[in-house]
Length: 166
Image (cartoon, rainbow, N blue to C red):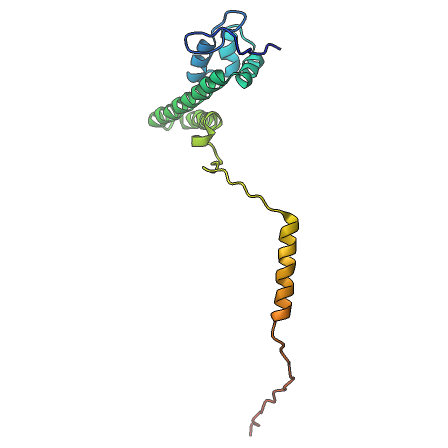
């Protein structure tokens, strides 16, 4: 597999130039227009898996691809709005399916904004030493046993008085 070296030639946009001379910028443009990655890559003679591999190796390509996915998601949301305005009684079922597709794809391409599960805005890291936590809990339990008041229970019985009828 071809690995993008640090000294690879780059185009005017800072993207690596593939060995076959295809343009990764055109691939990025096609993705932003809503084309699937496979179709966008094949139009430039680039294998999609190679594109994904380069994307994992090259920060500039990764950033450009992420921006293209986000633009594509925004375009998908705009398409949904346009479809919603044109729905009538005759085509509503087919248009609903198209809208659901665009909503799903927007959620996949820009999950932070349109995804089903919203990721937390901040990363929280908690470090707990289990052994220390167990020792502290044991000490608290022992302290609670020592300081508990002694309660003596006495048994008392209640007698109920009944009035007789009559």
